[in-house]
Image (cartoon, rainbow, N blue to C red; front, side, top):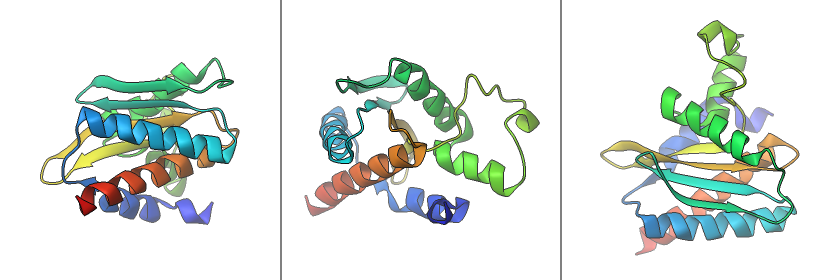
Length: 158
């Protein structure tokens, strides 16, 4: 798990800053995440929000029935902690803390991989990208990271 340290995830979030992000971008990113999930062989659920509005949501065939809850739990971490769900989890782990130490309900929040903030340059966090369904939450994180990097590369070439 050394790749996913708090420092690495902080740097990743600082790298994935978009010059703009529209609903059309959300649809393009959703298609990229769908493709990444298929390449991993994991049936995943995908949710993208902008300013609190779900603008993209897709459930691949075979994705677990509890995926809706996992997406919401990851999104809540981003919305309330202002960082990716795995970054928050790594912060807790590296500080020897638990959700309970922060008076956070573990049934409502998921501090694991698969949730990243959408950060707009000059503005800050405007939404979230969440993936759930892989047997290992670090695979969810890898899918989100790859998809966001792909979209950012396309947007910076425009």
